[in-house]
Image (tube, rainbow, N blue to C red; front, side, top):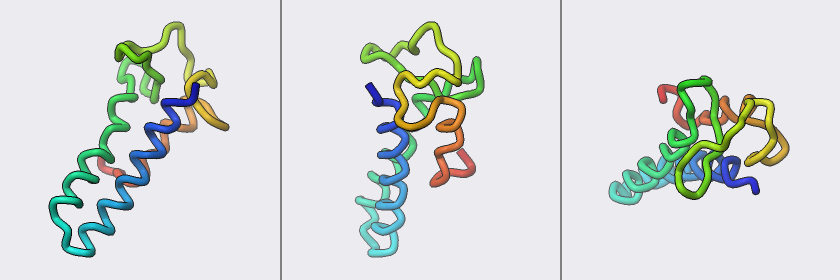
Length: 90
């Protein structure tokens, strides 16, 4: 029900763990967490310029508006579109 929110929240956590692993000189772990932290990108829908939940088969939910709460927890696609603070360049 809130899988999109969980994807973004786990990506943020993985970004933090990657930084910790880098600090501890655990290079393989740092690389693995950094790669996982970019999974948020799978939710970005360039056609609308916002994050968008997907079905299990990988297709975006239809119909959809960034103001829709389906797939999100305590927010919507518009607000979660800004939730990749661990990867500002991305």
